[in-house]
Image (tube, rainbow, N blue to C red; front, side):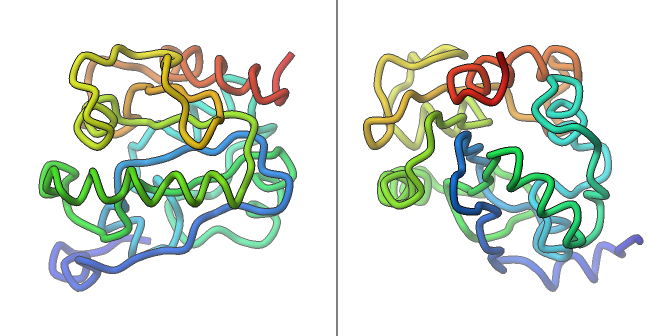
Length: 188
């Protein structure tokens, strides 16, 4: 399934629902949906995004979902059954995360507190260190577990899995994502 640039542009500012079920143990927080994600309704859907492959390599998920299109019921059930949930700091879709304003990121950070309280995960992993720094006004935050929690839940700020982040590989992302999965009781 492919989309032309013009087709993707029709999804600008669209939103997608959170991917989370009862019993979510580890809540991953993306920056905001990309246009491909908005088109498919699947978090981290753009071909080349390393999020789902990193979750499989880390052992968080048992198999790779068909993530470049709409998730089918079996893939959604596998993700939810693993105790994994996905939300975003900012709900509106853009072509690039750098289109978001600091005010949008700060408002999203404040709203995330309520989502975390409602979902009650055991760990939160924000995948986008710069967005974490700007949204939570923590300009000196470094990757890893943060001293500050979100809604009283242990929180990690971790590398973004986008292909635009050339510094990380599936293997390095898997290592980073395994830390909050261990804290959440998903990995031993």
